[in-house]
Length: 211
Image (cartoon, rainbow, N blue to C red; front, side, top):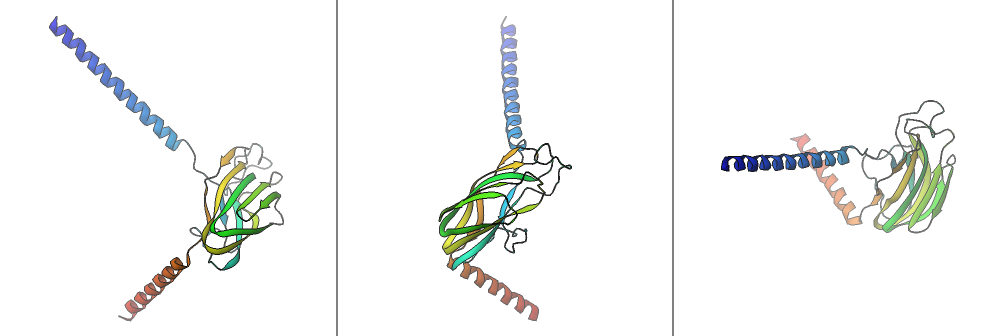
């Protein structure tokens, strides 16, 4: 009788252990699905310093000291949908429509906006915020699209940030953009430190070359 009860308790503990193990596996699978099952944001909104559709290597910076231009582009990627399917049943990375809000922070204020001549959009600008709605559903193409030139006044350290954004893709799916910095305005002291660092590196390189 005692032996039988021991076996029952042992099987009960084994069953509970298997149940806990199963729960752990289920939790791990769920976390994995949440982490890996959501695609990363592909669309970029960026400032092209040379106004040629190419982004800077990192976050581009502009110096303090008055009115400057930020050349805004939006890029969904390089893959093209089959003919006449973009903005319907396409599988490419064309941007068919977008709505963006950008904010000037700290020492950066917004002055005005000149849309690209070929862009189909509506916009509104004040000193602190820039909003734009764009549409390209007729003959959209993959790759960077020029939104226009945003004029900013960089009187002190600050930044231009994408506050929010939604994009409609080639298959009419929507994408929420990740907020982030478009342009940074370093404090003058930071610029001095960077310049000093560059000069020091050049000096050390010249000494190494002579030795």
